[in-house]
Image (cartoon, rainbow, N blue to C red; front, side, top):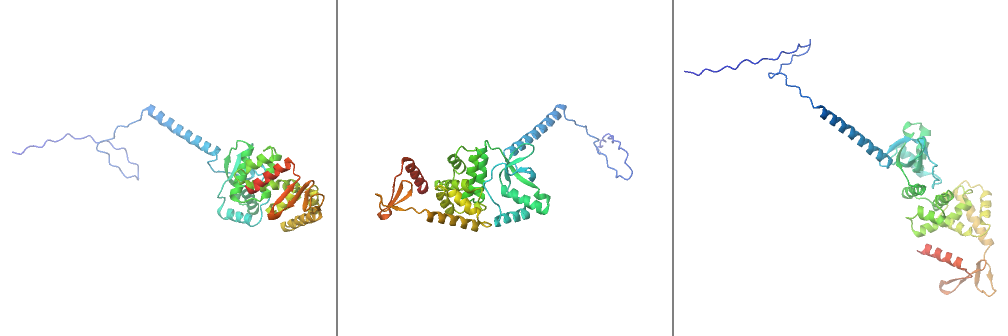
Length: 339
């Protein structure tokens, strides 16, 4: 006799909601709607607090990165004060400047400039003067808005000396300056009280340079002070002519004679200006050639008042009449040149 199969009681089917016109009916779940789970209120509060804290942390991190110069910012070009520091670079023309404009036009600004925050939404330029100039020229030429802004890194130098040093280091790395331009920033930094004297300015701005290089820059200081307001192409002044000028300027009246020669000639080009300077030096040397004296100093030349130079065998040079001050300066100069 077969065993009877027990029937399960019928399951109550959920009543479906009316189906809107045009919509396909959805079969109800055989298990019916499940219970609705709702998180506890304390969990909601904790999640919201965590989200707010995370957002505040991101904001703090971004602000710190901005202030510490780790974030590139885009600011209006007109907000950059390019003469906030006295610039070491004098001129920006020629093929190098044209190449920079062509690069900016084709690829945009690839390297940010360095600035420090000033008042009223302005920024003082530390380094990147040529890029600012090129962008300004491109905007004036094209009126393209992409040249109206500049990418910057915000710096916070502890004192003005640090800002000058940053400018000098950036230019030393990117584009070699002339000795005249290097000496000029030393002179201007001392004039503005950034450094107390030439020696500290040379060491502060060019401490990484060799002793010989600092010595040559120091020699150009007198040239800058004597001729900066007269020269039209000072950045083209070569090392040899500059050192000759520095030597000649030790003689009284040299500044006046050089200025007079420059003002008497229209120096439209660097070549013309250097030719005038060289001519003035030649005339000065030929007109003041030291004369041989025989008053107990046969074969010696009086190179300065009371100072005699005698040349002996084997290229031996003897200086006579040096006092302690001159002797000390001579020894310091020799150490700088030969060290």
